[in-house]
Image 1 (tube, rainbow, N blue to C red):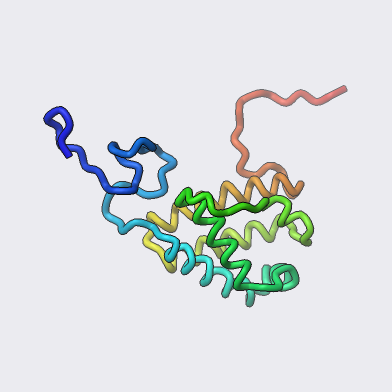
Image 2: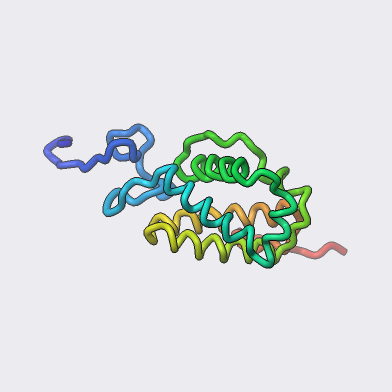
Length: 166
């Protein structure tokens, strides 16, 4: 596409210049060098990850006790991650409420994230994997804090001193 004598590259459906969504740092993919991320990629990541979780010595006991229909759980998680990364808006749940009833400890988050990172790097090109790792890290910190597990690890410092009460 040419605009004002300048050649502008536009990739359909990505949020480029011709798209009213614009391009910013939160867009899920860089504009070149990778095939577009699809729900099929997400389904592969989720399927491979939860196959590992089911047999994992740390996470398996928590998840196997909580998940009674793995196919449905995986469909829900594909919807969740599609909503987060592809902005499909198909997920209609409440992650905080979904996790409150389970015996989750802070170390489960660290182990979950390490396994997620490992799996993402196994099944995706590094740029795509990093998108999922970054989102999972932020979501994990939020869940951990919301569930009262830990010390706000990963919270941004805003430079305001904390003054102890008398």
